Image (cartoon, rainbow, N blue to C red; front, top):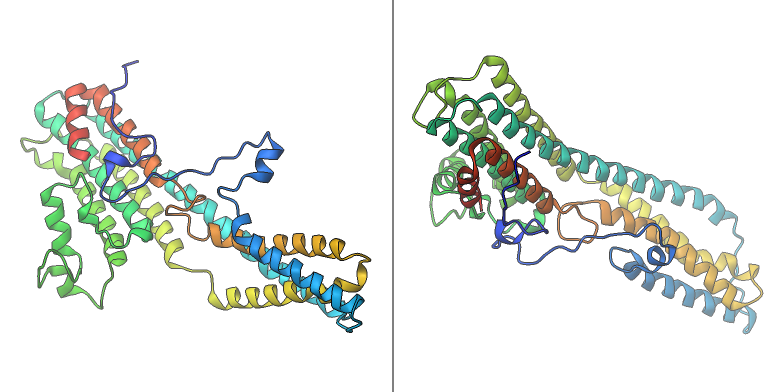
Length: 373
């Protein structure tokens, strides 16, 4: 087995890859499942910091109600029958939302890993199909294929991480001037380097945001990737001496299709929010039920501490479930439980460079790494 070429991608997947886009390193949430103490008391990535104020507030409310009910004789206790029926609705709305969001969360990871797998398959197949051609043109084509794959992955991540909507796809490190000019000319941006007109704005059917541009830029790079696959048909100085067979081209095109299909699924997930009426209804029922629960339980306990502890953990359970759904709703970004997509891209880059190294040697691998970074 050939030794791996050393690349300078940091473990976080950021840094040199795009220092302008990522100013800080994301700390991933890790769990030591074998340690119950670690799981119970880990604060980073937990919903405890956000839920704790609600728990304390409701516990204090329950203590006040207990005091007024038992010490001052104020009749605040209510029959819990209505709350028993309402609990069914609250549980359904909160848990069903958590299940749906969890399905979207895991589905997004599946689509993201599918894109990474297709990118690795494409560079490996492209190199294997042309590995017997050691001409400089073949090496240039393999490097171009690798470069287009890296551009697709980086532009895609800008689109998925909508928190960086102030950054444009063509401002990424490692994108050469021809690609920058192409994206600036085609995307309907309102402020591309002071230009007053471009083709994208001419054909736009409405005002487009930077987020819209990022999604469009990914499809534009997909077209460039497809064009690179067909480039050997026209036999230029930067192509293999012999064109690939049609079944080989179809294999590479299938990888592009897989990448675009998975990306389209991710785009659909991101632009399709959880229905607002359901969110509003769930939170209305949730907060009303949770913060009126002390009135139902005040007569069930003999001591105010017992009531406070019970209310504290019931509040944590129900409101905590809602915060878990909020945490998983958008898994792309810098939150503790978000996917570290840039680290995944960094690993894919390493595999791409290693593949080029295996076929064409260290010089080609270093050249593509330098161009990409």
